[in-house]
Image (cartoon, rainbow, N blue to C red; front, side, top):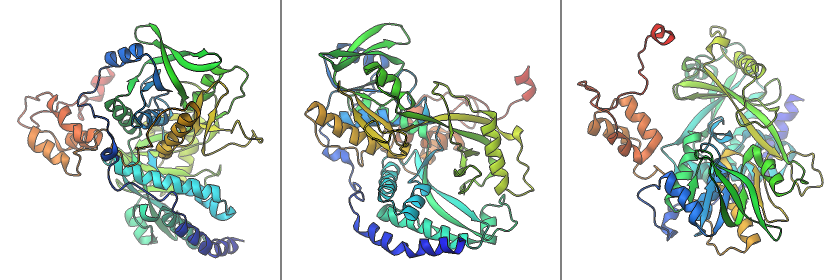
Length: 524
């Protein structure tokens, strides 16, 4: 049976290869920044929150009002404002305070979805992967300071798996086409152990290495929102939607509450977009109490363990865990992230990882690490739980089927809802949502301009920017690297605000938390 699986993959490889070669619909990527097409001025100074609140209150009517400041909501706001639509975005907490900051930090197409597409000859799954790989390339291009390619190793412990996995990963490269980050390759056992010395040696046959993207998810989300604000969108956090406003049965705005001052005010809009992720149904029920829930929340737990559990520049993929889900084992900020789980959960604002999920991840990690490495519960430095907003299509006859992709729906009252999807495809989701909103509400708008549109901090960034920070401001190398990778071209503005240390070196850049501290003094 195992040999049959390998042969089946190889036999269906040629027709899928032809499918990749002739499907160019999703293969286009802007080679020139979209800013060349924009007539909107880019603000040099970001408006304060007070100014943004005043804009929300004083504007007679917005074209588009987006509820939700996660990746999708911020993406919708950026898409709308760059179409020359008068745009507002409200978020009841911090931007990216929810699911968008609790991801695996990967920008990926979905290797497991491609496996389903190959084995079941599922064209829709193939298109979903192809779209995600196109968006992966775009995201790496528009925010190079916050993202980068990452090699991920897939260890092989059975000889028949080597050609099977190799065919699948090569297919992943082929589907990416011109957007392939780097070509995947096969490693011998000795070479795999050289690159990943913590790997379990027993019965190891070899390994396959492929490339996906890694990014700072919270900063990326914030960068999208900041870019929307620079182009003129009224973007405000800690602003909760209390209820929807209606006129003649149609949604015409929202009632907002400033959670800092407690003041309430109305914001009118021709179109209201619900982009609230796991809280999708709560906003839909503001529109109509009779609607059925479409969100099927699933908890994805990640843990942070010390950096010595993995190499600095190589991730690991466990393709077949005991519950059937893949586990990633990735370097991050000099630490190691391991996850994720996929368990049903209730929607809460601050989900807490369960002990069972933490122990499950640790158990899976033990399967792939050498016996010399003792995986201890006490090594878990942090853990977080993100609620994955899986959805059922409200327009589908089979409402029990959960969609791993996204859906855009329009209610009878005109509320536009975007739900589901994943981080990597936020831009495509926003484009589809705005296309639907423009058509449904007959808005006068330009075409989508977000492909190739550089995000906040991308301008002026180079891989060697941190050297200029060290030389020009006297920062420590580590601090300079952090500023460059966090703020990009805006790092110089942050460096100007740095405190003088009073030491010969570093000259400026007093750390918020010293890297040298006394545990006893902290306990006291």
